[in-house]
Figure (tube, rainbow, N blue to C red):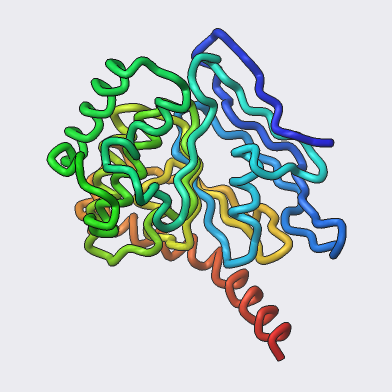
Length: 275
């Protein structure tokens, strides 16, 4: 049965970290095809964004990369440069913190699961909480934080665990625009400092262009790759400055034109099922 194949490699500078070849996912009892023939290579250190209409298989693809689901056909190769580090960490849509744990303990969770020494955990978590302005909230519980702060803790938990690959499933979708803007800036700063390989799912074309190096546009169900678009803007990026550029608006429109037909098709299919 197809699974994610982890390829160990001591050479840190391999150009491709994730390789998907003709990946299909279908559900045997219904015959429903979620993904159909996804083939793409993602270089190490790239911020790779996936956009597509609801129901196109974006989250299914991310769960396959995380090892939470298995593809039905095709191959998924993930190169691991350092076996002592986790291959990936995942940030889910919405709030995924443990409500009975403090900010500090939530941030330390992955490290404790790996049985990292407590002194190293304390030092690592402090660095990340200070970097994100959360250190003074270290003893608070999630219920005492705003939605934006809870997502910052989720980001800290993932980065503190030092995975080679970060998988993000619409992590900011539930936030208001002001908090989303702040977290875009925060994530860009953290990513610039770490240069981790990121696979990021979003419905927002603005978010995709703001954050990504490369964007894969997916079709409505079954999910196929419709377009693969390079984002030409230099780094580091500053969100408000970037969004004032004419080239930014032009790229957003170009991607939306690629996406609009698929969104309309997904909506019509959903309305047809509901009638």
